Image 1 (tube, rainbow, N blue to C red):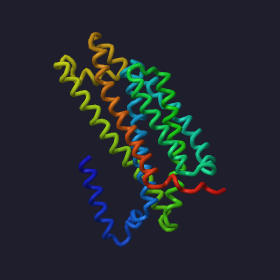
Image 2 (tube, helix red, strand yellow):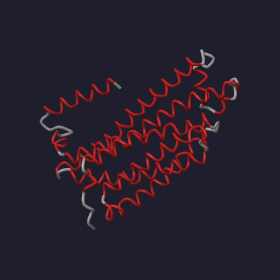
Image 3 (spheres, helix red, strand yellow):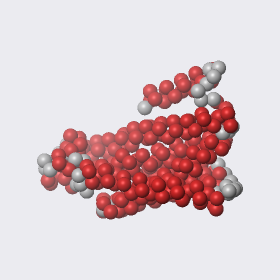
Length: 262
């Protein structure tokens, strides 16, 4: 990750002296466009936590198969479509960034719902939270994508669209690494507290229903507690990113924007 940040710094330096830069520096002199990029960054960094770790929750904490764990993504896919249909119409009535605010709130409902329900979370509850996560994506994506294009100068519209995509990809990549570090730290602390009765190798097996059957049964519950602590911290971090997006909307004055005219 450090190397990645170093490469980004070098890219910034090279782009500043290039005669025909791939990413013109003038993009970042437009406040509202920069805010659009930041919203994409924080919201997509938040949502990737669900995609990566909820299948693990279903398998490791509920003891379900990989197939059933993967199905936690289905409600999100359905409500992503629902949100993408609702968002463009809603912006005419309440404003485009108010719709993005609704999307960010949907993310927070999803992640905090999982945090407060804790290990008592059922599979059906995960599916409901997945619907909120998908709705948040659907409400946010098309609105922000069009906002980036509208806020850029006509000559910069293609590069602004491409940079918004890059911002999403980089955010998901960096946050996946950070979430992995959060989980690994929680697992290591759990191993130390167990006085090495539980090992990292054993914890790696707990998230696979078939391999978990070979683990000592009296240690299954403690191992699930350790895994839950890690995933719980990830959900909190994801909710904080969505909260930062809301603060950007408020502090950036974006919620004061007029409604889109038909």
